[in-house]
Amino acid sequence: MIKRLIPAFIAITLFSCEQVETPQNEEQQATTTVKNHSYGNIDEISTNHLHLELNVDFENKALTGVARHTMDNKGADKAVFDIKKMNIEKVTLGKKGTETETTFTIGQYDSLLGAPLIVDLSSEDQFVNIYYSTQKDADALDWLPAELTGSKKYPFLYTQGQAILTRTWIPVQDTPENRFTYSADLKVPSELLALMSATNPTEKNETGEYSFEMKQPIPSYLLALAVGELDYRQLSDNSGVYAEPHLIDAAEAEFKDIPKMIDAAEGLYGEYLWDVYDVIILPYSFPFGGMENPRLTFLTPTLIAGDGSLVSTVAHELAHSWSGNLVTNASWNDFWLNEGFTVYFENRIMEEVYGEEIADMLAMIEFQELKRSVDDLMAEGREKDTYLKLDLHGRDPDDGMTDIAYVKGAFFLKTIEEKVGREKFDVFLNAYFKAHEFKTLTTEKFVEYINENLFEKENIEFNLNEWIYGEGIPSNVIQLNSDRFVVAQELAQEVKDGNKLPTDLKRSDKITQEWLAFIRAFDGELSKEQMIMVDEQLNFKNSGNSEIMSEWFVLGIKNDYKEIRPEIKAFLKKVGRRKFLEPLYTTLAKTEETLEWGKEVYKEARPYYHAVSFHTIDKILGVNH
Ligand code: BES
Ligand code: ZN
Image (tube, rainbow, N blue to C red; front, side):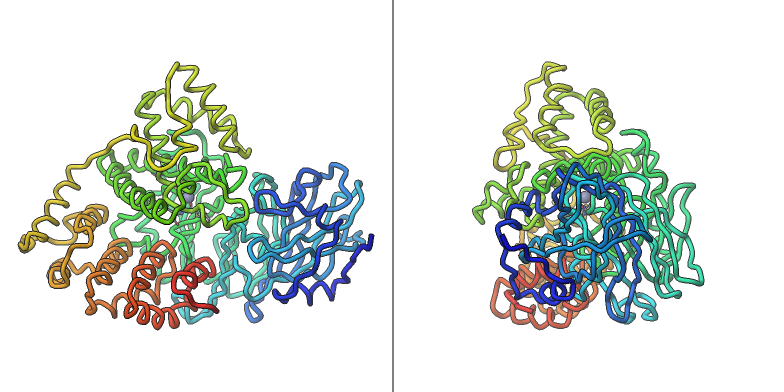
């Protein structure tokens, strides 16, 4: 058998060009099986500790340096890593300083998974050092030029690893099944501060050199980095907020309840095991509401509504410190174990801190979205994507990021809580988190665990299989109601009936979720004239509240309310959060005229978005870049 050892420089050339497909020989095929969206051969050899030495080069939009893996070798003669859009310079074996170069091959490139990096070693080898640099279009990395940041003076970089993007900025065995500790030495431009999902500095130094440590073992998707002009404000002994200088005051005020949330979470499900809980407000391009990077939650600035009304996202990311970061889904098919538990837990934190009425309104808004998502998935013939347990084999794990994992997952747990009683359920959940901390879990293992430790123990019948392996929303789902929503819905009915709004009604009279219930109650049946009337009094179109604006804009597009196009355009050119972009562009794509306008706006807006968002929108609008 011919062993194809590609010298480093050829490997770089081959790999930097996506079109070139390197044929796999038999041996490669045998050594590179894909499991859980990863080529990593973790059953034979797996990373225990990762040390990064990286230079952050804004001019060339590249991270350059070395990833040093300390591995647990169970007798392997190869270590397989995941890489994507990355140049491998060389690979060495041995401890730093006493390294010897080894041979490696790069397997066939797959547009979803990237390629396996196969490193030759012996069963005695434990230290693998991969010298590499990232490519400009690495999907995890958002390199923002100074013009796109708040101050417009300094550039900004942040990463987004979940679900399978870490492999575009670090060569790793990129599967949630394996956990490792990490450390890093970074060099950044001296005007900027670097932060990671690890121990962090709170202020800049003159050298631009920073060291980091994450002592608790984490899955690869939780590795994270942010570099920019950043200030820090402490909120309590173990929490604080980072933001660009122009946002730091607003961020500190908006998120002042974080210490209360931490107390509430610990009271519910046990000690916070990550020492510090900080948040960072990223630039507007951040594609998510939040990302639970350990010790340092990443947040979108769209949460800063001025009245604290969108802080449940912080409760959500904090809750992940237990569900997700301590107890991790073993594969992306089990994603609901991360997100369903987290949405449930988030709601419990909100109830502790703000009361049951608020918590119920939040849950009801989510439930409305779940019903819509189930209908959409069914209409698309994706019935199986309404199961909690997913089958994402050969598909993008992003396909699983629907309200099913999040809200069906949470309502499954809420329904169990209702059936067994809160007290017993909390005892169960505490034991669940304790029993699985720093471990990964499959849905099947969860089923075994809950059957044994809750249902059999308490002698309870529950249609668990229907919830997990069945379509849609089971009929025993818990029912919630809210008097305040009824009032908001009645108000919408008044407008529908052709009446005016009460003249003294102000937007500040209701919280965000009540206004969402109001807008949704129209069910799309609102004339342009009525929308103008509502805007004259309540000014939704310029409310500065991203949740209300995006919902209102979708309705505006549907109802040919062209007068708000400048506001829609400004929004699309500012906000890169996929949750808002997706419904807006999807609605625009529905008629020829709006699609044309949407494409024009998108041309200008696309450079403001992270790859996670623009890949999705490219597909919606059918544009090819
Ligand atoms: N972990 C997710 C974000 C994520 C999931 C990124 C899958 C990539 C792949 C995060 O915790 C999340 O759920 N964010 C939500 C927040 C919301 C549910 C409160 C978001 O961004 O909308
Ligand atoms: Zn989440």
